[in-house]
Structures are given as structure tokens and as C-alpha cells.
Image (tube, rainbow over all chains, first blue to last red; front, side):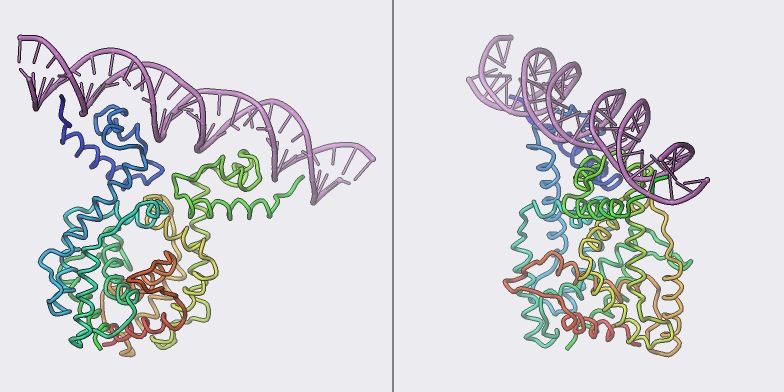
Amino acid sequence: MRTKDENKAAAIRENAMKMIVAEGFDGFSMQKLAKSASVSPATLYIYYKNREDLLSQLFNEVQQTFADVALEGFNPELSFEEGLWIQWKNRLKFVLEYPTHFCFYEQFRNSPLVNNSGIHLSSFKENMKLFVINAIQKGELKMMEPEIFWSVAYGSFYALVKFHLQETTMMGKNFKLNEESLKTTFDMIIKALKP
Amino acid sequence: MRTKDENKAAAIRENAMKMIVAEGFDGFSMQKLAKSASVSPATLYIYYKNREDLLSQLFNEVQQTFADVALEGFNPELSFEEGLWIQWKNRLKFVLEYPTHFCFYEQFRNSPLVNNSGIHLSSFKENMKLFVINAIQKGELKMMEPEIFWSVAYGSFYALVKFHLQETTMMGKNFKLNEESLKTTFDMIIKALKP
DNA sequence: AATATAAATGAACGTTCGTTCTTTTACAAA
DNA sequence: TTTGTAAAAGAACGAACGTTCATTTATATT
């Protein structure tokens, strides 16, 4: 019996993401992917049931990786400020290290395709739930609805990252995202979240 | 000579946006649009040069409308808190009144297609620039880089709206976005932005 | 009422799409 | 070294794609 070639599998995943980031979902096709990954179109159907399956598997993998990276060195007993800052730094690291993965993820999240993909990340969610409850009990965090918490705690972060990835020049000045400018923003958000 | 039927034009615009919001860019095709708008495929090419032109014109129109709505009742001489709050309220009004337009806009903004579309909104940008400078001079707003300002001042807003539009149930509770929950979030952001 | 002209049509173009077929190839187990 | 089996390939399928064409229809102007 013959074994699957992991190089091929990786090439398929990598080229699929690159293509989607560069050309969007309507610029992505199985035949183009096969060609760019130096593989027969039929081979794609050994690894994936069909186009939709390919996309949703890719999304789930990236989402899982992103969630794992976000929680590196984190535990829910940390002080609120330290725990949140670790997550911001981790997420920035992921964005800088795997910009293509992140862009693919963001594009997918904003498309209707995301609804067809059953995702859970239950470990991540339970970790965060505990973290937030602890922080409120310790008086480090205002009591608020979870949606408001997520929006304030991460909305600015993602907005900032988006500026960085678009390499936008606003008002003539050039903006570079690094740990320092991230910390400046983080401190403002901490001020907002304190009781 | 025969005149263009504005009803047809509106049906094309409306159905195009609905289709993209429901099925994404790769679910959108000229033939399906023609059928859903009760129009011949050839008719689409009277109104638009091609598919790409249709999409980018649609995006520009929605973006312009959104920017106009955001500045209703606004002027750069307002106090920072009042001026920003007016914009939050205006944006919420747009989201609630034209959810399809907004979803289309957000989906487009997160796709690579946005790079091909030359947009300016110079009036909006100059208004905001003046507003921010005034606020800093009056001591109502911390000095900060423009990208950080935009991220903090609007990042939470958009994150909150996204929760609302996905009608997500987080942690068992059901979240409804209204002017009250918006104001709660706004007050936290104001705290973050104050010197 | 006649005419000119642009809107609107339906059928059709060649191309590319997602997917499947049959055949060949490579490798683990015997 | 032989054999079994799944990986991998390339050609091909019908369907759908974006777009164009020749023709018909409606209306503002004469």
C-alpha cells in the first residue's frame, strides 16, 4: 500500500490559503489550486470530500491553531491585566508570524460560509469564562455583559491589526504595529474595563 | 428614445447585495442575479461594464451612504464626547435600518476585491481630522496616533455590531443591541480615550 | 402619427467550473 | 521479490460561468 505524501498535503493547504487571501473566494477554484500545488485535480478529492469540505477543514484548523496560540502561557488564575496582555501579545505574534493564515481566517469569518462550519473551541471558551468570572470577583474588571466584554477587550486589537495588515497610510503618516504601540492601546483598554 | 427603468436598476442593486450577503462572492453570478431581478443577463451590461464594475460601484455607493449617515447632525466643533456619540448612534441606526447593506459592506471590506476599488471619502476624512485635532487641543482627548484613535474609538463598536448581526448566543444568554447597551460600551471607551 | 434611439431581450458563444472516471504508480506487508 | 492496496494522475463529463450578439420593444422628440 502507498502512503499519503505529507508534502503534498501541506502544499495543498498552503496554496489554498494563499489563493484565497490573494483573490478571494470567487478567485479560488479546485483546478487552479491543483495546478498551483503541482497536483492532479483528482488528488484533491483524496484529501477532501469536496470544495466546501476543503474550505471548512482549513478554517477549522486555522481557528484551532489561533486559539491555541492565544492561550500560550495563559491560565485563568492570572491577574486580569496580565492575562489579557498575554493574549494580546500571543495574538500579535500569530498575526506577524502567520499573516496569510490570519487573513484567510478573517476573510472566512466575514463570509456566509462560516455558518456552515460547526466549530466549538469549547476548551478556549471555558478557560475564558473562568478568567472573566475570577477577574470580576477580584474587582479587577467591571461587571458587564459578555458581548460587551469581548467587544471592548478585543475590538480595538483587531481593528489595529487590520490597519497593520492593510499597510494603510492614514493622514500622511506611516503606521507600524509592534509590541510598543500595542501596549499603548492595551493600557487605554484596561482603563476602560476597570471598575 | 427609451429611458432606463429605475425600478429595474434598484432591483438589480438590491438583489445583488442580498445574494452576496446570503451566499458570498462565489455564490454570486451574473446569470443568477439576472434571474432574481427578473431581467435579461444582457440588461446587466447596460447598467454595468462587467461583473467587477457592478460590485465596485455597489460598494462605493454603500460606503458613501454609510459615511453620509455617520455624519448626520455632526460637526467638528462639537465636544468630543458628544460628537463621537452622535456618530455611534448614527452608525447603529444605519446598521439596524439597512442590515443587508451593512453586511455587504463588511464582507466586501474583508475581501481582496476592496483593493481594486478606488475610494476616497475625502469630505468625511477631513471632517474627522478637524474633529480630532480640536478635541486634543481642548484637552478632551489624549494625543495618540491616528490608527490607534480609530481602533479604540470604533473597534469596540464594530465588534459589538458583529455580535448583534450574527445573533450569537454567548454563554447561554441572549444579547440584543440597542441604544442602551451601546451607551454602556461607549462610556467605557470614552474613559479609555480621555487624557 | 411617424421616427429615431436607446433600453431590453433571449439565445448563444467559448471558457472554466466542480467532480468523477479509468488507469498507472509507489510503497508496506508478505 | 512478489503482491495487495491506496495514492496519484490525466482526461473527460455536464453544468454553470461571464459576456456578446442580433433582434425586438418602448418612449421622447419631431
